[in-house]
Image (cartoon, rainbow, N blue to C red; front, side):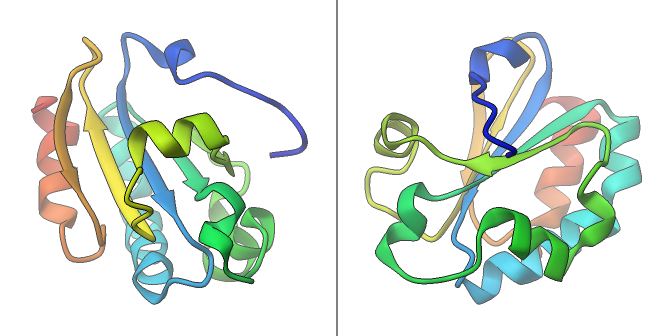
Length: 135
């Protein structure tokens, strides 16, 4: 956000949840609310959340990432351990070639993908288990 570019490799050695979402997606709104509810647990367990809207919002109109966060979970705007932004075309093609509106990756501190899923509000127990164990 704010025009800054970053690379996922900057977070090597950290547990990461990389979540690609679309701002027009209802399950994405519910997912962000659920993640916000568990933000303290995730922070205590050392998870970095990289939350990116899909490249060009998957071709559909919708809010910007900043507007979406402000509307759904404004308490996360400056939260430690949370990175918000927009996926580059390359990242989207690599991690989401089928262009799912809601997909996340749980990546351990060694850079290995431990799980791929969607709908964080429905799969929160999987996310919290990963936060605790890294698996």
